Length: 337
Image (cartoon, rainbow, N blue to C red; front, side, top):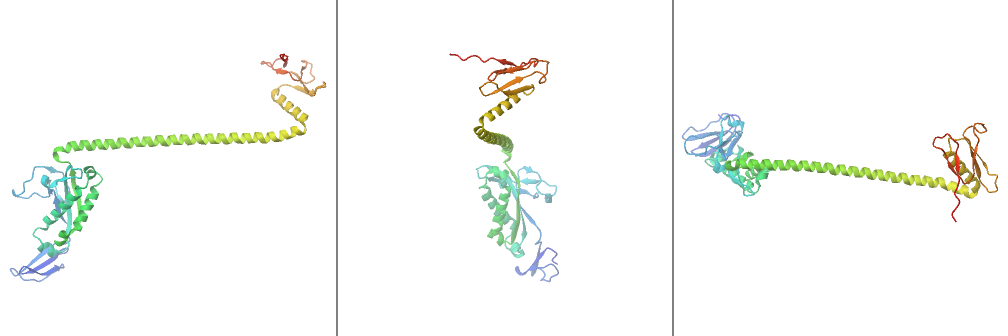
């Protein structure tokens, strides 16, 4: 009887008579003429590298009392013993590192698996260890601790799947996983301190880079703001100058046409700005010289409260600070000889 997920192998006088018997009921010669081997083909098998998954009885294997935490739930509650002689590897920077792993595989050909070699697990373990030695020898220990573990597993699995020796024993590798990657026990604490220091260095460096990037971006923003303000001020001054020039051109043309009228208009506008809060009278000068006379009164025009004060043309006007008295004409000093 071959059960589900199993494959039968029938032998007659030691020679394979029927291979790959499907699940079900089959007839074969009884012993000692015939023999039937039922192989769990769909079962996932494991091969340990560098440790013993289950303790073996007897003194055949001398294992040092060194252990590390449980690696897979399928191993149950038992602890696994690491074998130092089989778990020490030389990394790419010539540093010794303790590595253990596990290979998971299935039976691809039950006849080759059962009749090819006596112990297929030993062949798988030897090929996997050879591939692991070659891959770790090209990988620095720092990368092996951190970022290169997935790459190491993929390379070892690729070499296992491409191995002619593994294919010849009817095995199909499914996965390879690293379980324990640390420094040897004697220097494990020192390596942990070095790793912590390297992590602190990376953290401080990242913080410095973030602060530097923030300062640079802040300075760039401030520079862009100053450039934009300067550009806006430049445009403002240029437009204001163009406006003043545009306003002055018609005024200059009118001055050319009627200079006297333009001069009187400018005079009136200036007096209106300077003496805007005072009543004033401006009339043409009775003198023969052309010009205007300015009369300023502190009250209403024509009133009797205070007499008007005349300011001859060409005199400077002095307005009292208390605004109580009328404006006074400041005499112009005679020119020096």
